[in-house]
Image (cartoon, rainbow, N blue to C red; front, side, top):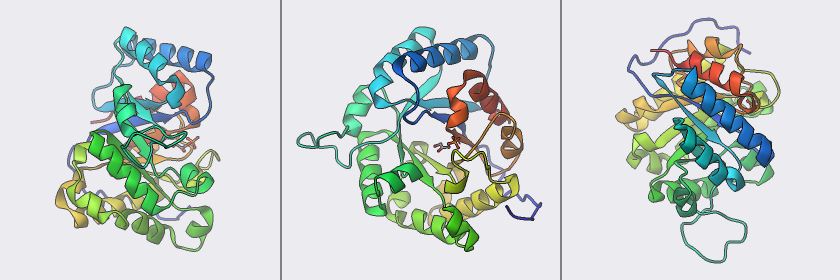
Length: 270
Ligand code: 13P
């Protein structure tokens, strides 16, 4: 959306690349299983990835079935939960699933702060902070989503909004194990709309995010920063060229094994 064309790297260090599929509330069990089988088969037989790790976030209900398929195929794909409870306690929390229960099921990461949870479930920074803490205390990693709405971007507020979303949790960032942290910049106006941020806009936000994180703590310079919002196999290569974009959090295109693996190949760059 900007007219700028200059892409300036803010760091040259090697960071972990990730492509993560957020399946949201989409596939039925049968579809989820066949998608996992196809992904596993293609990954094991034809797609070799060296730098980019893969993960998928099916609905929690399907997790055990998906895990068993991945294990049988020896496919290196990590499991991500789409949400967790605000507490590690057992007890009267109808409908919730704690991070401990997710860990027991073999899940390694939890998506927190996704715009769909912020909007549909009115999740605010206080609740997001509780979920991040419960997840980290359990030893799982956090895929922490930030991003501005279209109105906020058009009002010139994108950077302020994202800054506030990060700075609300400075206390967590000061101590976090950076191997347990992935941050996904997902502009809300790009999610499911087919309207991807331009590589320049995405890089600009990612570069600023990295600077912001580094100011909080030097090691956070190495945080994997993913872009999310209408990432497809045909736009992934340009996004992957941006020096501060370390991968993608993919919705719609992750429901097709070929597209998802093509996106992973785009980010499998040295
Ligand atoms: P789409 O790739 O469908 O735009 O979804 C992005 C997203 O919300 C991933 O978390």
